[in-house]
Length: 106
Length: 285
Image 1 (cartoon, rainbow over the protein chains, first blue to last red):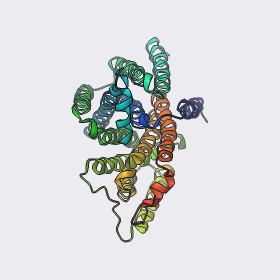
Image 2: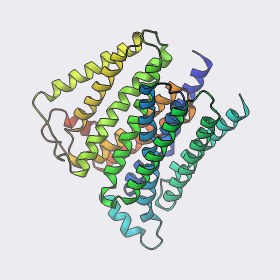
Image 3: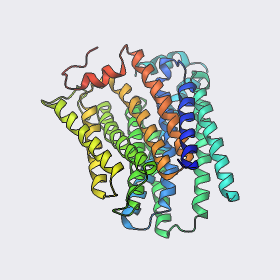
Image 4: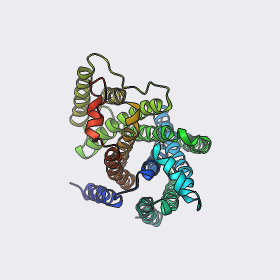
């Protein structure tokens, strides 16, 4: 096993453990926003898409790179914006009780 | 390591810390919105750093650069506009759609790197294993999430859709996936294996999601979300990029815990929801 691969596997295992630990019991009203927030984070895939677009040298690879960049950037931009909109209902000082109850029904 | 790469790597670490802190803050309503912003700032840092690498890259072709810019502008624009204009009640299906495209992007990266190896060359296990997983999981989440989007939006019937022989069909598709994974990992590069693995995974994503009722969809979307995280992480192994490995693994694990909690809140088990759809007419409560 190369040093690079070992490093990557170690990073993977540690990140999985952090992922398990960082979420403990969360209220049901936050389930959907949390899902959406996590969805936005895996939008990091756009980073990989940008990097492969630089390697592309022929039409087939241009096509694949374009698909990856387009889909990845939809994921990252849409993910963060829609999560932020979902969470506006929690940040209003007066209303959160009522509105968060509505959010839980969805 | 050049100065640029050192700075970029360190900033990737900062962005990874932002994701973790952001997720942590999203556990309570009070700090949730700021948590999402912290994680968003981390993402912006990571993307800017990657673009810096892109600018300094000398091997890139002009066409590649143009495609990159067009893809980014169209993708960011479309995602942001859809997210801004969507009705509050339609948000779950939009999240599912964004999850689908994430899985699709991860699979496209896997396909790109697999095809960039010349046909007939043998691959190291350290490359072929994550590629195969990336394609399978990415393909399943892409088609599965699209079906979930359709069900949540009412474009596909929310009722469990079953057909005679569904169990046999599922078993066959799983078998084809296993065979194509073995072909991809154990044999020399051949574009046919890639087509087989992608088609079988897309088909399984559909077969897995259509028998599940609309009421169970949020749990399924959350499960597919965790899957996408794993696919993104595998894509990180394929292109040897730690930013992807960390973000993907984090979402994969956090998404799994979240899925379990969502199922528990409905007094269901995840296995019950997934397996309940396999071959049965009604999803039992």
